[in-house]
Length: 346
Image (cartoon, rainbow, N blue to C red; front, side):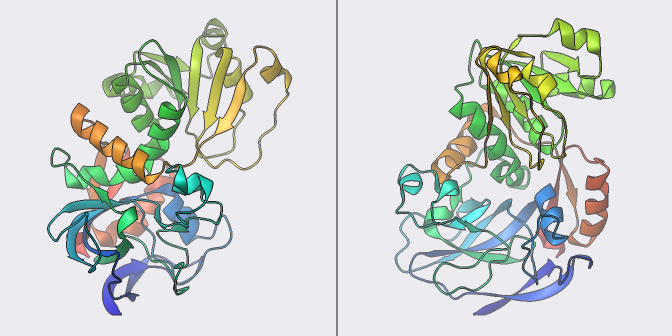
């Protein structure tokens, strides 16, 4: 075991504060990473405050990790010290079940191991996230960051990026697709950028007219104000695919009306219960679905795609000691569009 500096919380009603945590000694298949940057996800806030139940304390958040390899285990062949690498929302899975064999480790039938708030599959020790100086991760769950990507701004691709990219790829979005993206936050702004880069015609769907200019700057060809009844009526049946990124409870039925026959509405935000009249699905053979993060192979595909296309999240860099204020700002949606912690300030 090696102690490393970190920031975390000891209870749901406590702030994020400095602490020391243990990182395991290198196993043969482990990669040790010196963390340079860590994105701040809204799920970090939810887990820290136990909003979803099941939080394990002490808890060190952070699953958008970018850094440099500092050491490797004796059996590691894919990485060496000095490599630019990243770690996303998971650090292990069984690698044996059908989803894992299909390179969709996020849907592991035995449960994937979360980067934080999880338990190590081998010794049961708690997993701690990226609000720390270093992390040790099984080789199969380490990603390579192409040289063309800014390491600091690449960090949010590991959650916000892949959560938006995976459904776009799985539903075949590309040239000729007309898609809508609901919500212009951390996930939504990536949905707009990635959808446009894949060749789709992208419409930003928002309740806020003030976001129209930003949406167009990000790559949207049109903006639809969902509180404008006339505009929504005119858009009936327009879209092949809609990506719903809003992370709070809301009515999805108005968006189903916007789909073409055989169109799909895919939810990527955790919004708890929804109410739905099935006629919105029956009238046009429409589909309502959900999507989590992507697997390791798909996440590497995303990083390579973003390097090729020059796509990066819009980020605001913060110091480690600004994290509690950043959480407060996230609750007010006061960020464009992702906080990233410079871990040199820890």
